[in-house]
Image (cartoon, rainbow over all chains, first blue to last red; front, side, top):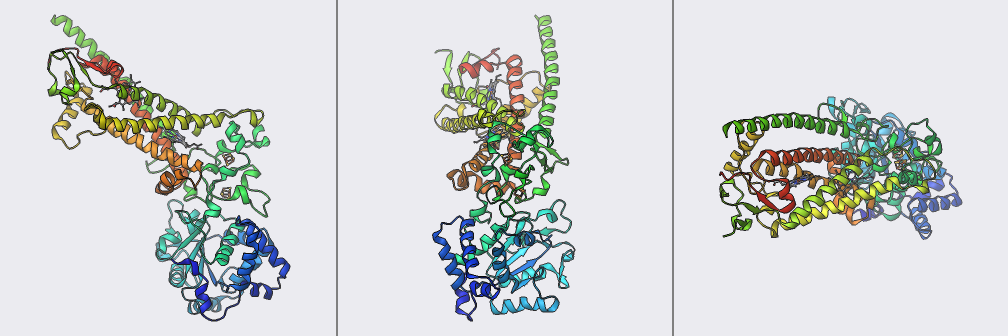
Amino acid sequence: MSNTELAQSVDSKSPIESFYDVMRRQGISRRSFIKYCSLTATALGLGPAFVGKIAYAMENKPRIPVLWLHGLECTCCSESFIRSAHPLAKDVILSMISLDYDDTIMAAAGQQAEAIIDETIEKYDGNFILAVEGNTPLNQDGMSCIIAGKPFHHQIERVAKHCKAIISWGSCASWGCVQAARPNPTQATPTHKLITDKPIIKVPGCPPIAEVMTGVITYMVTFDKMPTLDRQGRPKMFYSQRIHDKCYRRPHFDAGQFVEEFDDENAKKGYCLYKVGCKGPTTYNACSTIRWNEGTSFPIQAGHGCIGCSEDGFWDKGSFYDRLTDVHGFGVEADADEIGLAVAGATGVAIAVHAAASALKSAKNNHDNNIGE
Amino acid sequence: MSTKKMSSAIGDLDSSGIESTIEAVYVYEAPVRLWHWVNAGAITVLALTGYFIGSPLPSMSGEASDFYVMGYIRFFHFVAAYVFAIGMIGRIYWAFVGNGHAKQLFVPPLLKKSWWREVWHEARWYAFLEKEPNKYVGHNPLASLFMFLMFVVGSIFMIFTGFALYAEGQGTDSWWYDAFAGWLIPLFGQSQDVHTWHHLGMWFILTFVIIHIYAAIREDVMSRQSLVSTMISGWRTWKDDRR
Ligand code: HEM
Ligand code: HEM
Ligand code: SF4
Ligand code: SF4
């Protein structure tokens, strides 16, 4: 899509207030606003020169309406979002979102709330962003998630038809997450498998990091376009490195210094958690750089391996505490070494038997030949 | 005429091509033999280091800066991986420029009925149902089938999954990532799945190696032709002069 003019087209319609207007109306001071801009520039990995650019965009660009829908989910994405490092970030972004639709945190309820959706669609047809938290169950006619008296898929399909672009918040909307874990009884379906005709930004994580969420939105507002996505639809600026690539315990990994058990001496020393199942080497996320809760810590810093929460199907890879994870589909659940040893072992036994039979045959042939001569 | 005829003059992979008068045939040219043993060495190193990447050695204690155990294990895995991959490319090149037998590994005549009959005959020989195996200048048809299905397919699988994992280490903005990882990882699901399949691939190749070495030694003893010495000197010799 021509995502470069996300906002321009909004421009041409009725005069809409800017983010800054909204913020001022919410009682946010100019000083706090500038602080927010510089923090966001840092979070996006942009230089100081961009602070002004962000401030300018926020002051002058029309606010892009966002409808935030909730499907089958646990609300951890919203919880994460409202805890973003700088208290303002959430105020800023929330003020803009709550004005439209977010059934968890908006003031309106019932008929009134649903009316907001109709209104937004009517007013900003093709020009608003649809943010989805959670996914869509399709089995049992979608009865596992009822919004305003109807299965959720009615709502998401209708809204998606009129939106400009979709943000899939969290692993639920991006991949399926726990609702979609085997055997996925409700057929919980991630956004991109349901809606195929709109650009979708995946922001996986269970939940995603707050600064990543606000960063994605701010980027879109500031630059009037979608962030650069990788092949799987994740914003490159936050998902192009593995936890392992920037993990502060990495020197212990390279040295071969591992925690063997959670209560051993090595755990106290802060060695690498690879052997107790850390999924850092296979997980693309920004935890080891941005960290959590105002940059306080992240799981590995707290002594627990990464469980790979931002990866597709992380619930179905066996124990969080095993390095080698299970393979399904052979009618058994076993890791690669268990399967391999069984196959190679069986081959070895078969060969031993075959070798013995061959030796017997050779002996017999020699015997026969000797008699024959 | 010399009893040692160049194999190119025979160029025939069937048993019917063998005249009883031929004492020895030059089958595996030097590059093929060199490749065979270098490749076997590389796979040994890959399997050993790969196993320890999956299940690392007991933890070291002391200063992290004094050790690089996991680092070296991974380093040797990658060195052997390059040897393995470049060797494979070289071997494929040789299939084009080498003698007829150099092609056999890559192109088993899967559509030829008579060839399948010989596969069957060879299988019966292994099942102790035939008194004698046929003679073959190149690989016997069963060996050829099995080398293709397990070794060639398995190796290509390992090279692609291996370089996809390697690309992850090189970074998502690297050339490697675009070439191997970007499309391959989603195909398997996620990175962890690629690790698991790469690991299973090791056992697939090891199963080939076990059977291959057993068969090579067994046939060296029990068949009517030379095997192990052929892969060393290049010359195939015969133990009898019947057809
Ligand atoms: C016959 C050939 C090979 C064998 C038997 C082999 C075996 C293995 C095994 C068992 C693992 C551990 C997997 C896990 O549980 O995480 C591994 C990891 C790996 N292999 Fe291979 N491999 C082979 C070829 C290659 C090739 C050609 C490459 C290409 C560079 C490669 C690159 C890697 C990488 C990058 C890893 C992951 C290392 C890490 O996570 O630190 N392998 N290999
Ligand atoms: C990792 C270990 C090994 C691998 C992957 C391997 C693989 C192969 C392959 C691919 C070929 C076909 C060569 C070609 O057509 O270019 C071959 C042939 C052969 N290999 Fe190996 N090999 C291994 C180890 C060994 C060992 C240890 C021996 C000795 C006991 C051996 C004996 C032979 C023989 C005798 C042939 C020729 C078979 C024939 O004439 O039909 N190999 N091997
Ligand atoms: S703790 Fe996890 S992410 Fe950190 S170095 Fe070890 S394996 Fe990698
Ligand atoms: S460290 Fe891993 S499991 Fe924890 S939040 Fe980050 S990606 Fe998710």
